[in-house]
Image 1 (cartoon, one colour):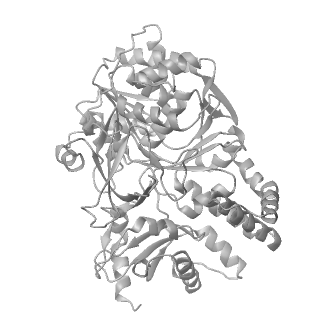
Image 2 (tube, rainbow, N blue to C red):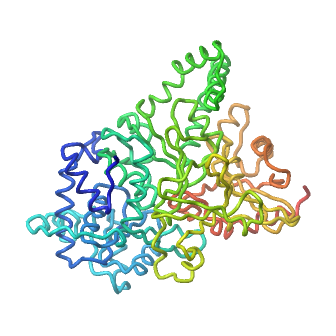
Image 3 (cartoon, rainbow, N blue to C red):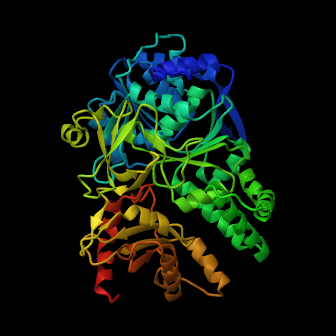
Length: 590
Protein backbone atom coordinates (compact mmCIF):
# COMPACT_ATOMS: atom_id res chain seq x y z
CA UNK A 1 0.00 0.00 0.00
CA UNK A 2 1.26 3.49 -0.89
CA UNK A 3 2.61 5.41 2.12
CA UNK A 4 0.44 8.31 3.23
CA UNK A 5 1.46 11.61 4.80
CA UNK A 6 -0.61 13.63 7.27
CA UNK A 7 1.48 16.82 7.13
CA UNK A 8 4.36 18.30 5.18
CA UNK A 9 6.53 17.85 8.29
CA UNK A 10 5.63 14.15 8.28
CA UNK A 11 6.41 13.99 4.55
CA UNK A 12 9.88 15.49 4.93
CA UNK A 13 10.83 13.40 7.95
CA UNK A 14 9.83 10.11 6.35
CA UNK A 15 11.58 10.90 3.06
CA UNK A 16 14.82 12.17 4.60
CA UNK A 17 15.06 9.05 6.76
CA UNK A 18 14.33 6.71 3.86
CA UNK A 19 16.42 8.44 1.18
CA UNK A 20 19.13 10.05 3.33
CA UNK A 21 22.06 9.47 0.94
CA UNK A 22 20.20 10.16 -2.30
CA UNK A 23 20.62 13.46 -4.17
CA UNK A 24 17.73 15.88 -3.70
CA UNK A 25 18.53 19.29 -5.23
CA UNK A 26 21.00 20.11 -7.99
CA UNK A 27 22.27 23.62 -8.70
CA UNK A 28 24.51 24.75 -11.53
CA UNK A 29 27.62 26.79 -10.82
CA UNK A 30 30.35 27.49 -13.33
CA UNK A 31 28.82 25.06 -15.79
CA UNK A 32 28.83 22.13 -13.34
CA UNK A 33 25.97 20.63 -11.32
CA UNK A 34 26.35 20.26 -7.56
CA UNK A 35 23.93 18.06 -5.65
CA UNK A 36 22.74 18.24 -2.05
CA UNK A 37 21.58 14.97 -0.46
CA UNK A 38 18.38 14.45 1.51
CA UNK A 39 20.25 14.16 4.82
CA UNK A 40 22.24 17.37 4.20
CA UNK A 41 19.02 19.16 3.30
CA UNK A 42 17.31 17.92 6.49
CA UNK A 43 20.18 19.30 8.60
CA UNK A 44 19.82 22.71 6.93
CA UNK A 45 16.07 22.64 7.57
CA UNK A 46 16.77 21.86 11.23
CA UNK A 47 19.20 24.79 11.45
CA UNK A 48 16.85 27.26 9.82
CA UNK A 49 13.91 26.05 11.91
CA UNK A 50 16.03 26.87 14.97
CA UNK A 51 16.84 30.28 13.48
CA UNK A 52 13.14 31.00 13.04
CA UNK A 53 12.58 29.93 16.64
CA UNK A 54 15.24 32.43 17.74
CA UNK A 55 13.25 35.14 15.94
CA UNK A 56 10.13 34.14 17.86
CA UNK A 57 8.36 32.49 14.93
CA UNK A 58 5.91 29.88 16.17
CA UNK A 59 2.55 28.28 15.68
CA UNK A 60 0.17 30.38 13.60
CA UNK A 61 2.82 32.88 12.40
CA UNK A 62 3.67 33.58 8.77
CA UNK A 63 7.04 33.54 6.99
CA UNK A 64 7.13 35.11 3.52
CA UNK A 65 9.63 34.85 0.68
CA UNK A 66 10.15 36.75 -2.58
CA UNK A 67 12.48 34.51 -4.56
CA UNK A 68 12.80 32.22 -7.51
CA UNK A 69 13.20 28.47 -6.94
CA UNK A 70 16.31 27.63 -4.95
CA UNK A 71 17.57 25.29 -2.26
CA UNK A 72 17.14 28.18 0.21
CA UNK A 73 13.48 28.50 -0.86
CA UNK A 74 12.86 24.86 0.00
CA UNK A 75 14.80 25.07 3.28
CA UNK A 76 12.74 28.09 4.35
CA UNK A 77 9.46 26.38 3.43
CA UNK A 78 10.05 23.14 5.31
CA UNK A 79 11.57 24.97 8.30
CA UNK A 80 8.45 27.14 8.46
CA UNK A 81 6.20 24.06 8.39
CA UNK A 82 8.31 22.66 11.26
CA UNK A 83 7.43 25.71 13.37
CA UNK A 84 3.71 25.10 12.67
CA UNK A 85 3.78 28.44 10.85
CA UNK A 86 2.47 29.21 7.37
CA UNK A 87 4.68 29.88 4.34
CA UNK A 88 3.84 32.80 2.03
CA UNK A 89 5.72 32.64 -1.29
CA UNK A 90 5.79 35.45 -3.85
CA UNK A 91 7.33 35.89 -7.29
CA UNK A 92 10.37 38.04 -7.98
CA UNK A 93 8.66 39.10 -11.23
CA UNK A 94 5.73 40.68 -9.38
CA UNK A 95 5.60 44.42 -8.76
CA UNK A 96 6.88 45.57 -5.34
CA UNK A 97 3.40 46.97 -4.65
CA UNK A 98 2.06 43.41 -4.81
CA UNK A 99 4.74 42.16 -2.39
CA UNK A 100 3.75 44.92 0.00
CA UNK A 101 0.06 44.10 -0.30
CA UNK A 102 0.67 40.37 0.29
CA UNK A 103 2.97 40.90 3.29
CA UNK A 104 0.40 43.23 4.85
CA UNK A 105 -2.56 40.99 4.00
CA UNK A 106 -0.92 37.82 5.33
CA UNK A 107 0.55 39.45 8.43
CA UNK A 108 4.02 38.00 7.78
CA UNK A 109 6.56 38.54 10.58
CA UNK A 110 9.56 37.50 8.49
CA UNK A 111 10.29 38.00 4.80
CA UNK A 112 13.19 36.64 2.75
CA UNK A 113 14.43 38.31 -0.45
CA UNK A 114 16.06 36.28 -3.20
CA UNK A 115 18.26 38.98 -4.76
CA UNK A 116 19.92 42.13 -3.48
CA UNK A 117 17.43 44.25 -5.42
CA UNK A 118 14.49 42.43 -3.84
CA UNK A 119 16.05 42.64 -0.37
CA UNK A 120 16.57 46.40 -0.68
CA UNK A 121 12.95 46.89 -1.77
CA UNK A 122 11.70 44.85 1.19
CA UNK A 123 13.84 46.85 3.63
CA UNK A 124 12.47 50.07 2.13
CA UNK A 125 8.84 49.03 2.65
CA UNK A 126 9.34 47.51 6.13
CA UNK A 127 8.40 50.71 8.06
CA UNK A 128 5.00 50.67 6.33
CA UNK A 129 4.24 47.07 7.37
CA UNK A 130 3.21 46.78 11.04
CA UNK A 131 3.52 42.97 11.24
CA UNK A 132 6.93 42.73 9.55
CA UNK A 133 9.79 42.37 12.06
CA UNK A 134 12.66 40.78 10.10
CA UNK A 135 13.99 41.01 6.54
CA UNK A 136 16.57 38.49 5.29
CA UNK A 137 18.49 38.31 2.03
CA UNK A 138 19.64 35.14 0.29
CA UNK A 139 22.14 37.05 -1.87
CA UNK A 140 23.71 38.97 1.04
CA UNK A 141 27.27 38.03 2.06
CA UNK A 142 27.59 35.49 4.89
CA UNK A 143 29.10 38.20 7.11
CA UNK A 144 25.90 40.28 6.97
CA UNK A 145 23.78 39.52 10.04
CA UNK A 146 20.64 39.72 7.89
CA UNK A 147 21.82 37.17 5.35
CA UNK A 148 20.02 33.86 5.03
CA UNK A 149 23.30 32.05 5.54
CA UNK A 150 24.15 33.85 8.78
CA UNK A 151 20.76 32.89 10.23
CA UNK A 152 21.37 29.30 9.16
CA UNK A 153 24.74 29.30 10.93
CA UNK A 154 23.31 30.84 14.12
CA UNK A 155 20.58 28.22 14.23
CA UNK A 156 23.05 25.30 14.11
CA UNK A 157 24.22 25.17 17.75
CA UNK A 158 20.74 25.84 19.13
CA UNK A 159 18.38 23.13 17.86
CA UNK A 160 14.67 23.33 18.58
CA UNK A 161 12.12 20.56 18.60
CA UNK A 162 9.99 20.13 15.50
CA UNK A 163 6.42 21.39 15.96
CA UNK A 164 3.69 18.98 14.90
CA UNK A 165 1.04 20.73 12.80
CA UNK A 166 -2.32 19.03 12.60
CA UNK A 167 -3.92 18.11 9.26
CA UNK A 168 -6.22 21.14 9.40
CA UNK A 169 -3.48 23.59 10.41
CA UNK A 170 -2.60 26.26 7.87
CA UNK A 171 0.50 25.32 5.82
CA UNK A 172 0.67 27.90 3.07
CA UNK A 173 -0.82 30.96 1.48
CA UNK A 174 -0.88 30.80 -2.31
CA UNK A 175 -1.85 34.22 -3.62
CA UNK A 176 -3.84 34.29 -6.82
CA UNK A 177 -2.27 36.21 -9.65
CA UNK A 178 -4.67 39.12 -9.53
CA UNK A 179 -6.03 39.13 -13.09
CA UNK A 180 -9.05 41.18 -11.92
CA UNK A 181 -7.74 43.13 -8.90
CA UNK A 182 -5.72 42.61 -5.75
CA UNK A 183 -4.51 39.04 -5.25
CA UNK A 184 -6.44 36.80 -2.86
CA UNK A 185 -4.66 34.66 -0.28
CA UNK A 186 -5.70 31.05 -0.83
CA UNK A 187 -5.24 29.30 2.53
CA UNK A 188 -4.11 25.69 2.17
CA UNK A 189 -3.86 23.28 5.08
CA UNK A 190 -1.39 20.44 5.50
CA UNK A 191 -4.21 18.03 4.69
CA UNK A 192 -5.13 19.97 1.55
CA UNK A 193 -1.64 19.64 0.10
CA UNK A 194 -0.88 16.15 1.41
CA UNK A 195 -4.19 14.81 0.07
CA UNK A 196 -3.00 15.85 -3.39
CA UNK A 197 0.40 14.22 -2.93
CA UNK A 198 -1.15 11.03 -1.53
CA UNK A 199 -3.66 10.79 -4.39
CA UNK A 200 -1.15 11.31 -7.21
CA UNK A 201 1.18 8.70 -5.74
CA UNK A 202 -1.65 6.18 -6.12
CA UNK A 203 -2.02 6.96 -9.83
CA UNK A 204 1.60 7.08 -11.03
CA UNK A 205 4.13 4.30 -10.33
CA UNK A 206 6.92 6.67 -9.33
CA UNK A 207 10.33 5.29 -8.43
CA UNK A 208 13.00 6.77 -6.19
CA UNK A 209 15.29 7.52 -9.16
CA UNK A 210 12.84 10.03 -10.67
CA UNK A 211 14.47 13.31 -11.63
CA UNK A 212 13.00 16.61 -12.79
CA UNK A 213 14.34 19.91 -14.04
CA UNK A 214 12.55 22.52 -11.95
CA UNK A 215 11.69 25.68 -13.83
CA UNK A 216 8.07 26.26 -12.85
CA UNK A 217 7.74 28.65 -9.89
CA UNK A 218 7.22 26.89 -6.57
CA UNK A 219 5.34 30.02 -5.52
CA UNK A 220 2.46 28.62 -7.58
CA UNK A 221 0.42 25.68 -6.28
CA UNK A 222 1.20 23.57 -9.37
CA UNK A 223 4.96 23.85 -9.01
CA UNK A 224 4.94 23.62 -5.23
CA UNK A 225 2.64 20.60 -4.76
CA UNK A 226 3.18 18.66 -7.98
CA UNK A 227 6.92 19.10 -8.20
CA UNK A 228 8.52 20.08 -4.89
CA UNK A 229 6.41 18.12 -2.39
CA UNK A 230 5.62 15.22 -4.70
CA UNK A 231 9.23 14.68 -5.73
CA UNK A 232 10.43 14.86 -2.12
CA UNK A 233 7.76 12.31 -1.17
CA UNK A 234 9.02 9.70 -3.68
CA UNK A 235 12.74 10.23 -3.07
CA UNK A 236 13.24 11.96 -6.39
CA UNK A 237 15.75 14.65 -7.29
CA UNK A 238 15.28 18.11 -8.73
CA UNK A 239 17.82 20.06 -10.74
CA UNK A 240 16.93 23.74 -10.41
CA UNK A 241 17.04 25.43 -13.80
CA UNK A 242 19.33 28.46 -13.71
CA UNK A 243 17.98 30.36 -16.71
CA UNK A 244 14.98 29.77 -18.99
CA UNK A 245 17.15 30.46 -22.06
CA UNK A 246 19.26 27.40 -21.13
CA UNK A 247 16.29 25.13 -20.44
CA UNK A 248 16.81 22.78 -23.40
CA UNK A 249 20.57 22.51 -22.84
CA UNK A 250 19.99 21.78 -19.16
CA UNK A 251 17.43 19.10 -20.02
CA UNK A 252 20.07 17.30 -22.06
CA UNK A 253 22.54 17.52 -19.14
CA UNK A 254 20.17 16.61 -16.31
CA UNK A 255 18.33 13.86 -18.26
CA UNK A 256 15.07 14.08 -16.30
CA UNK A 257 12.54 11.26 -16.09
CA UNK A 258 9.69 13.66 -15.36
CA UNK A 259 8.96 17.20 -16.50
CA UNK A 260 6.34 19.54 -15.05
CA UNK A 261 5.44 22.24 -17.53
CA UNK A 262 2.76 24.61 -18.78
CA UNK A 263 1.24 24.60 -22.31
CA UNK A 264 3.49 27.42 -23.47
CA UNK A 265 6.51 25.12 -23.18
CA UNK A 266 4.82 22.44 -25.27
CA UNK A 267 3.72 25.03 -27.81
CA UNK A 268 7.37 26.07 -28.19
CA UNK A 269 8.42 22.45 -28.73
CA UNK A 270 5.69 22.12 -31.36
CA UNK A 271 6.80 25.32 -33.11
CA UNK A 272 10.50 24.51 -32.86
CA UNK A 273 10.30 20.99 -34.29
CA UNK A 274 7.98 22.08 -37.10
CA UNK A 275 10.29 24.99 -37.92
CA UNK A 276 13.28 22.64 -38.15
CA UNK A 277 11.34 20.27 -40.38
CA UNK A 278 10.36 23.09 -42.73
CA UNK A 279 14.06 23.54 -43.51
CA UNK A 280 14.61 19.89 -44.42
CA UNK A 281 14.30 18.32 -47.91
CA UNK A 282 10.79 17.51 -49.07
CA UNK A 283 11.26 13.74 -48.72
CA UNK A 284 12.30 14.11 -45.07
CA UNK A 285 9.37 16.44 -44.36
CA UNK A 286 6.88 14.02 -45.88
CA UNK A 287 8.35 11.09 -43.97
CA UNK A 288 8.20 13.10 -40.73
CA UNK A 289 4.56 14.07 -41.21
CA UNK A 290 3.70 10.48 -42.11
CA UNK A 291 5.32 9.34 -38.87
CA UNK A 292 3.34 11.89 -36.83
CA UNK A 293 0.12 10.86 -38.59
CA UNK A 294 0.67 7.13 -38.02
CA UNK A 295 1.72 7.61 -34.38
CA UNK A 296 -1.37 9.74 -33.72
CA UNK A 297 -3.72 7.20 -35.31
CA UNK A 298 -2.03 4.44 -33.34
CA UNK A 299 -2.57 6.36 -30.10
CA UNK A 300 -6.24 6.70 -31.01
CA UNK A 301 -6.56 2.92 -31.26
CA UNK A 302 -6.13 2.31 -35.00
CA UNK A 303 -3.64 -0.43 -35.85
CA UNK A 304 -1.20 0.63 -38.60
CA UNK A 305 -0.45 -1.66 -41.54
CA UNK A 306 3.01 -3.12 -42.09
CA UNK A 307 4.10 -0.28 -44.38
CA UNK A 308 2.99 2.36 -41.88
CA UNK A 309 4.61 0.49 -38.99
CA UNK A 310 7.88 0.39 -40.90
CA UNK A 311 7.67 4.08 -41.75
CA UNK A 312 7.00 4.94 -38.10
CA UNK A 313 9.99 2.87 -36.94
CA UNK A 314 12.21 4.65 -39.49
CA UNK A 315 10.99 8.11 -38.51
CA UNK A 316 11.43 7.27 -34.84
CA UNK A 317 15.04 6.20 -35.41
CA UNK A 318 15.98 9.08 -37.71
CA UNK A 319 14.04 11.99 -36.21
CA UNK A 320 11.91 11.36 -33.12
CA UNK A 321 14.75 9.77 -31.12
CA UNK A 322 16.92 12.84 -31.75
CA UNK A 323 14.17 15.13 -30.45
CA UNK A 324 13.84 12.98 -27.31
CA UNK A 325 17.62 13.08 -26.89
CA UNK A 326 17.45 16.89 -26.75
CA UNK A 327 15.35 16.43 -23.62
CA UNK A 328 17.73 13.96 -22.08
CA UNK A 329 16.30 10.77 -23.60
CA UNK A 330 14.81 9.46 -20.32
CA UNK A 331 11.44 11.23 -20.04
CA UNK A 332 8.71 8.91 -18.75
CA UNK A 333 6.23 11.43 -17.36
CA UNK A 334 5.50 14.84 -18.86
CA UNK A 335 2.84 16.65 -16.84
CA UNK A 336 1.02 19.69 -18.21
CA UNK A 337 -1.06 21.95 -16.02
CA UNK A 338 -2.02 25.54 -15.13
CA UNK A 339 -3.88 26.10 -18.44
CA UNK A 340 -5.50 24.13 -21.24
CA UNK A 341 -3.17 22.27 -23.61
CA UNK A 342 -4.18 22.32 -27.25
CA UNK A 343 -5.12 18.80 -28.42
CA UNK A 344 -3.11 19.12 -31.63
CA UNK A 345 0.00 19.99 -29.63
CA UNK A 346 -0.62 17.14 -27.18
CA UNK A 347 -0.97 14.62 -30.01
CA UNK A 348 2.15 15.99 -31.68
CA UNK A 349 4.29 15.66 -28.52
CA UNK A 350 2.79 12.22 -27.96
CA UNK A 351 3.73 11.18 -31.49
CA UNK A 352 7.35 12.06 -30.75
CA UNK A 353 7.31 9.35 -28.09
CA UNK A 354 6.91 11.70 -25.12
CA UNK A 355 3.64 10.95 -23.36
CA UNK A 356 1.89 14.02 -21.96
CA UNK A 357 -0.39 13.71 -18.95
CA UNK A 358 -2.65 16.73 -18.73
CA UNK A 359 -4.46 17.59 -15.53
CA UNK A 360 -6.79 20.24 -14.17
CA UNK A 361 -6.89 22.19 -10.96
CA UNK A 362 -6.76 25.54 -9.24
CA UNK A 363 -4.79 27.11 -6.42
CA UNK A 364 -8.01 26.72 -4.42
CA UNK A 365 -7.83 22.91 -4.83
CA UNK A 366 -4.17 22.51 -3.79
CA UNK A 367 -4.17 22.32 -6.95
CA UNK A 368 -5.07 18.95 -8.53
CA UNK A 369 -8.69 17.96 -9.22
CA UNK A 370 -8.31 15.62 -12.20
CA UNK A 371 -5.46 14.13 -14.18
CA UNK A 372 -4.76 11.72 -16.96
CA UNK A 373 -2.59 8.86 -15.72
CA UNK A 374 -1.00 5.65 -17.02
CA UNK A 375 -3.79 3.38 -18.25
CA UNK A 376 -6.34 6.20 -17.92
CA UNK A 377 -5.45 8.76 -20.57
CA UNK A 378 -7.53 10.56 -23.15
CA UNK A 379 -5.95 13.40 -25.13
CA UNK A 380 -8.18 16.46 -25.20
CA UNK A 381 -9.50 15.74 -21.73
CA UNK A 382 -7.96 16.75 -18.40
CA UNK A 383 -8.43 13.25 -17.05
CA UNK A 384 -10.46 11.71 -14.25
CA UNK A 385 -10.89 12.87 -10.67
CA UNK A 386 -8.05 11.93 -8.34
CA UNK A 387 -8.80 9.55 -5.43
CA UNK A 388 -10.90 11.13 -2.70
CA UNK A 389 -12.25 13.92 -4.90
CA UNK A 390 -15.70 14.29 -6.45
CA UNK A 391 -16.94 16.80 -9.02
CA UNK A 392 -20.39 17.79 -10.16
CA UNK A 393 -21.42 19.81 -13.19
CA UNK A 394 -23.80 22.62 -12.24
CA UNK A 395 -25.76 23.49 -15.38
CA UNK A 396 -27.96 26.15 -13.80
CA UNK A 397 -25.47 28.96 -14.49
CA UNK A 398 -24.86 27.91 -18.08
CA UNK A 399 -28.36 26.90 -19.12
CA UNK A 400 -26.69 24.28 -21.29
CA UNK A 401 -27.88 20.64 -21.24
CA UNK A 402 -24.29 19.35 -21.29
CA UNK A 403 -21.85 22.02 -20.09
CA UNK A 404 -21.94 23.61 -16.67
CA UNK A 405 -19.80 25.00 -13.86
CA UNK A 406 -17.35 22.53 -12.35
CA UNK A 407 -17.92 22.16 -8.61
CA UNK A 408 -15.25 20.31 -6.60
CA UNK A 409 -15.71 18.37 -3.36
CA UNK A 410 -12.89 16.76 -1.43
CA UNK A 411 -9.99 17.15 1.02
CA UNK A 412 -8.11 19.28 -1.53
CA UNK A 413 -10.58 22.20 -1.26
CA UNK A 414 -8.95 25.21 0.43
CA UNK A 415 -9.72 26.46 3.92
CA UNK A 416 -10.83 29.69 2.24
CA UNK A 417 -9.55 33.09 1.11
CA UNK A 418 -7.80 35.04 3.84
CA UNK A 419 -10.02 37.78 5.26
CA UNK A 420 -12.46 37.61 2.31
CA UNK A 421 -15.74 36.41 3.87
CA UNK A 422 -17.91 37.65 1.00
CA UNK A 423 -15.77 35.95 -1.62
CA UNK A 424 -15.68 32.77 0.45
CA UNK A 425 -19.47 32.79 0.56
CA UNK A 426 -19.56 33.25 -3.21
CA UNK A 427 -17.38 30.23 -4.05
CA UNK A 428 -17.88 27.74 -1.19
CA UNK A 429 -21.14 25.82 -0.99
CA UNK A 430 -22.85 24.85 2.27
CA UNK A 431 -21.17 21.42 2.14
CA UNK A 432 -17.79 23.04 1.31
CA UNK A 433 -17.80 22.34 -2.38
CA UNK A 434 -15.78 24.80 -4.46
CA UNK A 435 -17.51 26.59 -7.34
CA UNK A 436 -14.54 26.87 -9.67
CA UNK A 437 -15.87 29.37 -12.18
CA UNK A 438 -14.74 26.98 -14.91
CA UNK A 439 -17.11 25.47 -17.46
CA UNK A 440 -16.88 21.86 -18.52
CA UNK A 441 -18.50 18.47 -18.89
CA UNK A 442 -17.88 14.81 -18.10
CA UNK A 443 -17.98 12.18 -20.82
CA UNK A 444 -19.53 8.75 -20.35
CA UNK A 445 -16.25 7.33 -19.04
CA UNK A 446 -15.72 10.01 -16.41
CA UNK A 447 -13.12 12.10 -18.28
CA UNK A 448 -13.44 15.84 -17.69
CA UNK A 449 -13.33 18.41 -20.50
CA UNK A 450 -12.87 22.08 -19.62
CA UNK A 451 -14.43 24.51 -22.10
CA UNK A 452 -13.72 27.94 -20.59
CA UNK A 453 -14.22 30.27 -17.65
CA UNK A 454 -17.55 31.82 -16.75
CA UNK A 455 -15.96 35.25 -16.07
CA UNK A 456 -14.08 35.25 -19.38
CA UNK A 457 -17.10 34.14 -21.38
CA UNK A 458 -18.93 37.01 -23.06
CA UNK A 459 -21.90 37.60 -25.31
CA UNK A 460 -21.88 39.09 -28.79
CA UNK A 461 -24.59 41.46 -29.99
CA UNK A 462 -26.35 38.52 -31.63
CA UNK A 463 -26.70 36.77 -28.26
CA UNK A 464 -24.08 34.10 -28.97
CA UNK A 465 -21.72 33.24 -26.09
CA UNK A 466 -17.98 33.14 -26.74
CA UNK A 467 -15.34 31.41 -24.59
CA UNK A 468 -12.16 33.15 -25.80
CA UNK A 469 -9.38 31.03 -24.25
CA UNK A 470 -9.75 27.90 -26.43
CA UNK A 471 -9.87 30.14 -29.51
CA UNK A 472 -6.73 31.98 -28.45
CA UNK A 473 -4.86 28.75 -27.74
CA UNK A 474 -5.64 27.51 -31.24
CA UNK A 475 -4.66 30.76 -32.96
CA UNK A 476 -1.40 30.92 -30.99
CA UNK A 477 -0.25 27.78 -32.77
CA UNK A 478 0.58 29.96 -35.76
CA UNK A 479 4.39 30.09 -35.92
CA UNK A 480 4.18 33.83 -36.61
CA UNK A 481 2.37 34.74 -33.37
CA UNK A 482 3.50 34.66 -29.76
CA UNK A 483 0.19 35.66 -28.21
CA UNK A 484 -3.43 36.42 -29.07
CA UNK A 485 -6.36 38.04 -27.28
CA UNK A 486 -9.84 37.59 -28.75
CA UNK A 487 -12.21 40.51 -28.05
CA UNK A 488 -15.89 41.09 -28.75
CA UNK A 489 -18.06 41.56 -25.64
CA UNK A 490 -21.33 43.24 -26.70
CA UNK A 491 -19.91 43.75 -30.19
CA UNK A 492 -21.29 42.55 -33.55
CA UNK A 493 -18.37 40.14 -34.09
CA UNK A 494 -15.00 39.10 -32.68
CA UNK A 495 -11.72 40.82 -33.40
CA UNK A 496 -8.25 39.80 -32.23
CA UNK A 497 -5.16 41.48 -30.85
CA UNK A 498 -2.21 39.48 -32.22
CA UNK A 499 1.38 39.72 -31.00
CA UNK A 500 3.76 39.09 -33.87
CA UNK A 501 6.78 36.87 -33.46
CA UNK A 502 9.27 39.30 -34.96
CA UNK A 503 11.97 36.68 -35.59
CA UNK A 504 9.55 34.33 -37.34
CA UNK A 505 8.13 37.14 -39.47
CA UNK A 506 11.64 38.27 -40.42
CA UNK A 507 12.56 34.72 -41.46
CA UNK A 508 9.40 34.53 -43.57
CA UNK A 509 10.15 37.88 -45.19
CA UNK A 510 13.70 36.80 -46.02
CA UNK A 511 12.45 33.56 -47.58
CA UNK A 512 10.08 35.62 -49.73
CA UNK A 513 12.79 38.09 -50.74
CA UNK A 514 11.05 40.91 -48.89
CA UNK A 515 12.28 43.71 -46.66
CA UNK A 516 9.92 44.46 -43.77
CA UNK A 517 10.86 47.37 -41.53
CA UNK A 518 7.56 47.71 -39.65
CA UNK A 519 5.73 44.37 -39.59
CA UNK A 520 2.75 45.72 -37.65
CA UNK A 521 1.90 48.06 -40.54
CA UNK A 522 3.08 46.07 -43.54
CA UNK A 523 0.37 44.97 -45.99
CA UNK A 524 2.20 41.75 -46.89
CA UNK A 525 2.49 40.77 -43.23
CA UNK A 526 -1.22 41.58 -42.84
CA UNK A 527 -1.97 39.15 -45.67
CA UNK A 528 0.23 36.48 -44.04
CA UNK A 529 -1.54 36.83 -40.67
CA UNK A 530 -4.94 36.84 -42.36
CA UNK A 531 -4.10 33.49 -43.94
CA UNK A 532 -2.81 32.15 -40.62
CA UNK A 533 -5.92 33.18 -38.69
CA UNK A 534 -8.16 31.72 -41.40
CA UNK A 535 -6.28 28.42 -41.37
CA UNK A 536 -6.02 28.10 -37.58
CA UNK A 537 -9.64 29.18 -37.10
CA UNK A 538 -11.10 26.86 -39.73
CA UNK A 539 -12.70 24.70 -37.04
CA UNK A 540 -14.33 27.62 -35.20
CA UNK A 541 -18.03 28.33 -35.36
CA UNK A 542 -18.80 31.17 -37.74
CA UNK A 543 -19.53 33.71 -35.01
CA UNK A 544 -16.32 32.76 -33.12
CA UNK A 545 -13.92 33.64 -35.94
CA UNK A 546 -12.24 37.05 -35.62
CA UNK A 547 -13.23 39.17 -38.60
CA UNK A 548 -10.43 41.70 -38.08
CA UNK A 549 -7.21 41.86 -36.14
CA UNK A 550 -4.78 44.37 -34.70
CA UNK A 551 -1.11 43.33 -35.07
CA UNK A 552 1.42 44.55 -32.50
CA UNK A 553 5.10 43.78 -31.86
CA UNK A 554 5.18 44.47 -28.11
CA UNK A 555 5.45 41.08 -26.41
CA UNK A 556 3.15 40.25 -23.50
CA UNK A 557 5.36 39.61 -20.47
CA UNK A 558 5.17 39.38 -16.70
CA UNK A 559 7.43 42.44 -16.48
CA UNK A 560 5.09 44.71 -18.47
CA UNK A 561 2.07 43.44 -16.56
CA UNK A 562 0.33 41.74 -19.48
CA UNK A 563 0.87 38.21 -18.11
CA UNK A 564 0.55 36.71 -14.65
CA UNK A 565 3.62 34.93 -13.22
CA UNK A 566 2.06 31.68 -14.49
CA UNK A 567 1.87 33.22 -18.00
CA UNK A 568 -1.89 33.71 -18.13
CA UNK A 569 -3.26 36.74 -19.95
CA UNK A 570 -4.19 39.73 -17.80
CA UNK A 571 -7.09 40.90 -19.94
CA UNK A 572 -7.77 43.93 -17.81
CA UNK A 573 -4.19 45.18 -18.22
CA UNK A 574 -4.14 44.47 -21.96
CA UNK A 575 -7.40 46.35 -22.45
CA UNK A 576 -6.14 49.33 -20.48
CA UNK A 577 -3.60 49.84 -23.24
CA UNK A 578 -5.30 48.49 -26.38
CA UNK A 579 -9.08 48.77 -25.97
CA UNK A 580 -9.40 52.01 -27.95
CA UNK A 581 -7.42 50.53 -30.83
CA UNK A 582 -9.50 47.35 -30.73
CA UNK A 583 -12.75 49.34 -30.64
CA UNK A 584 -11.57 51.33 -33.67
CA UNK A 585 -11.56 48.10 -35.70
CA UNK A 586 -15.36 48.12 -35.58
CA UNK A 587 -15.45 51.45 -37.38
CA UNK A 588 -13.84 49.98 -40.49
CA UNK A 589 -15.56 47.99 -43.21
CA UNK A 590 -15.58 44.20 -42.90
